[in-house]
Length: 123
Image (cartoon, rainbow, N blue to C red; front, side, top):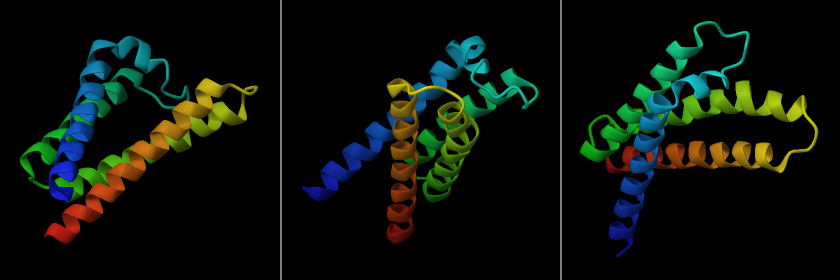
């Protein structure tokens, strides 16, 4: 039973990441406004992030390089936390939405690292 729940949850997580990737393509102009101003080529980073999200999801679906896909996904999300969320939290008044987004990404990164550890144990 635990394996079934774990596998379904893994596929749900991968599906969420895949949808996030699609949304990065669909709303690229808006997402580009979230890239910090000191980073050049905003649209490039949006598209690269979209591809990375979708590649990580596919690696989970087909169980090919899934450990690396999950580990790198977690690292990428932490880059977002450090370069987007924390500066927003420091430079703005209390905003529950910004705190929630930072916590959401912290949870998503943590899940990616947990999955990487699970795939490591499965060999």
